[in-house]
Image (cartoon, rainbow, N blue to C red; front, side, top):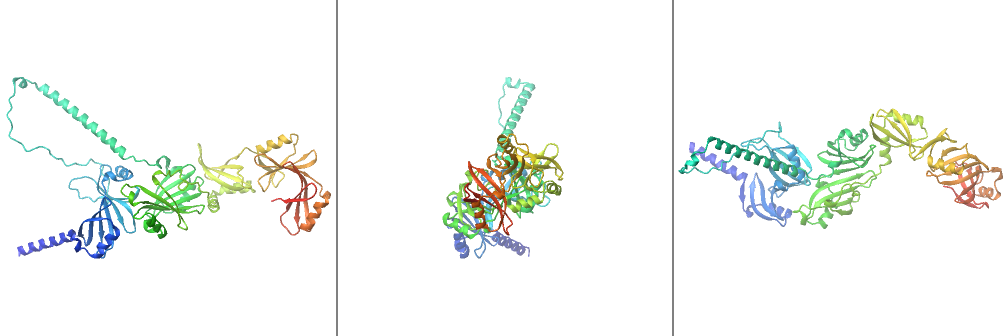
Length: 591
């Protein structure tokens, strides 16, 4: 009975062994499996087949790389792994492991390809301890070294103790002691001499160990410091204005692992959303510019994959992202490895139109500066909708102050500014016709702080709807130089964003129009409407019928003299500005 039980156990172990790893001949592998392998790796050379856990595993060599492909019985491809020496992984991965798992070792390191999953690095990291049964931490990184997922065992805690390395003895088997003849001189050596020599040897040993440790530390630091072009722009989250954070919540509501950067006038948040990377670009005043949303290989459209398969046969996918822009000029970027560059890890990049999926151009990622390339770091003008939405989120105190004190002005733009005493404050730019002439400052609660006239502005009397208007000093200086004795000037800003001034000149009531930079555009003299010359009166009657003549001027413009009339045609809401030569011949309608 005992013998039969033993035989049963042995048989069970043999069956288990065969199921777990059974060597196979090629003829023993199902045709669907071999056909599927040939389809996936047409140029590979198979070194062996085995059956493991009911899966067919092929050990092969392709383009100089050793791989292991796994298939189901019906030929369905499951995964392919390439064992990678830790010395060949991207430096950013080595840096991550060194920073987050000091004194730990990488026990498994390979490159994995799986259906509907981007090619990625798979690592298992564990604390080096003899006889340890602890489960490893599993890390996955994309092909350029960005962390995708980290999974530590349940209840895992970082160990900070020094790993107990196994001691290996190099002592050879002892031999019979050899009898040596000792001279009288050697016997005369004192105990103090022996003690001195031992102390010297001990000091030399310590110095040697210290030197090795320093070299090791230096080497480790050098290995763990890859070049990161974004590092110089990194900022703390506390330095990001609230308006930028609010916009991030709109564009990436479930953003995790947020890392912020400030490049020129743009805040960039690199984050994870639904286990995929996302980069959101936001202006200093909280206006969204664009978003890079990384995507899996299977989400890339067939139009793009067909293009790559046609022009880059045998390519391997690396990464892809969509670029959604505020100006609606969306694009899609694909980075891949051409077959000839797969082993050397030299990538190629390609841009496609976001809507038509038509090819735009290729780039070399190794020579593209992400902060100068117009396709990667372009200043994108915010849409009117986004700008309006951003302004709408200003504190009510700010909006109320502007509407009450500057009813003819609108908030054109704003940004957050750092004040040495108050911290972050609002800098609000308001204008009446689109030019940013007045800047108002408010604290974070919306309380008014101060007013600033930009571009050398000065507040003067107005003849328009309000008592005062802000006029550029360059315009006031130009007027004073031409009319030094005038002291009753009143100003206004017209719908063309020019500045009109009315005053009493040597010929009576007069008006001049200046451009914002101080150029005299027109010099007009008010004329009596009752003295309208017949040719002009006839033209108005023939072309506009019954019309109200509101103004009549003699105008000097560009060194020439004209007549100008302002009429309101019957049943029309808006006036028409007609220009005539000095003989009364029609010249043009002012736009």
